[in-house]
Length: 119
Length: 113
Image (cartoon, rainbow over all chains, first blue to last red; front, side):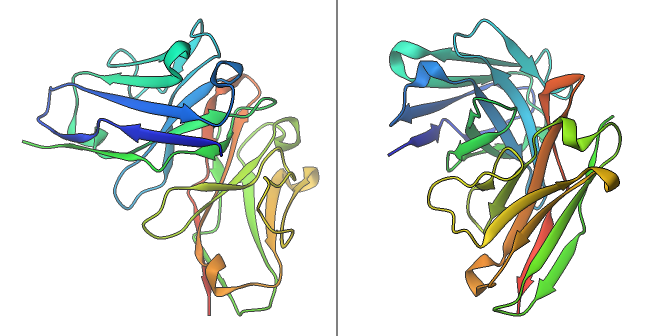
C-alpha cells in the first residue's frame, strides 16, 4: 500500500524552528518528486515547496522562500521540511504529497501534521 | 499571478448529478493538466481526478473530469450523488511559465441534501 506519514509538528514560538518529516512506503521513493502543501485553519490548500527525485532541484512559494528548506534522503525513503523564522501565519496542517509523473500535482497525500506558531 | 476560480458552494440531492467549475485567470487551462481533490471534514485531501480526467484506483467512475477550452475552465462532475460525497473540492493546476508552482482554486463546498 502506498503511504505517506508525516511527523514533527507541534507548538512553537514566533521566530522558532521546526523540522517536519514524511516517511514514504509502498512505492519506489526515488522515482518521484515530492512536495509539501499546507492548509491554515478554515482556509484552502496552498503549495509550499517541491523537490525533484534526487534533491537536485527545489522550489518554494514566495511566502516561505529563504525561511524553509526542503530536502530528502532516498536511502531512508524520507522527505523533510526545515522551517525557520516561523511566523503566526505559518500555522497550518502540513501535508506531504507525491508528485505526479507527468504533471505538477499529486495522486497521493499524507494525513498531515499540525504546526502552531504562537507565543 | 495565475489564479483558479471556483464557486464557493454547490448543493444537490442524492442520486442527482452535480458539476463544479474551475476557471483559469489567464493563458489556456487546456495547456496544463488539472487535478481535483476531495477533502471531507476533519480529513486530509485525497485525489479524485488527475491529469484532467484520470481517476486513481479506488475512485468510482461516478467522478469525471473535463476541460472546456472555449471558457478556459475545467469541470468535475459527480453523478449518482451520495451523502458521502459531501466535502470540499479543490481544483489545482499551474501556469505553463512556472510549472512547479502549484496553484489551487479556493475550494467548493458540496452539500448533498
